[in-house]
Amino acid sequence: MKHEDFIEIAKREVVSVESVYLDIPLDVREKLDVKDVFVVWSCKTLQNSKALLSMPHKGALYYEFTLNGDKEEIYMNAYRKLVNKKLDKNYIKSNHKDIYERT
Image 1: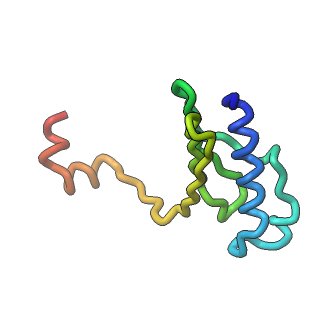
Image 2: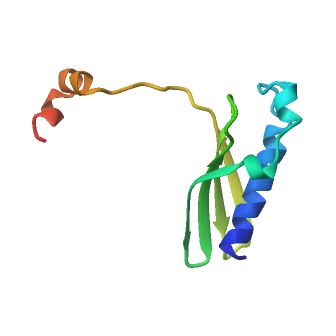
Image 3: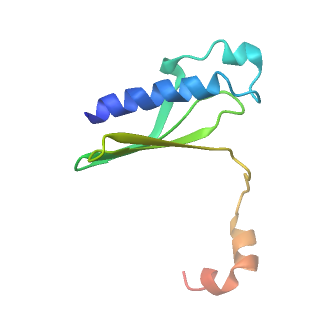
C-alpha cells in the first residue's frame, strides 16, 4: 500500500469515529469532512507507515495509525488530551533543579 493511500484511509477513519463521538456537539458532528482532518506527523519506513492525525474542532481526539506492511493491517488508537500545562523556566528550575543546573 502506498503511504498516501494509508493517509487517506486514516483520514476517513478519523471522520468515521468523530462523527459518532458523543462528546462532540451534534451540529459539529454533522459537518465533519475528510478535508478537515490534518496530519500532525507521518513517516514511512520500508513497508510500514505511522501517522498522527486530528481535527480542528474543540473536543477532537488525537489519533495514531500504524500500517504493518507485512500483514497488510492498519491499527488505530485514539487519545484524549488530559493535561495542558505550561512548564516555564521558573517551574522547571524549582522542580527539576538537578537537571536544570546541568544545562
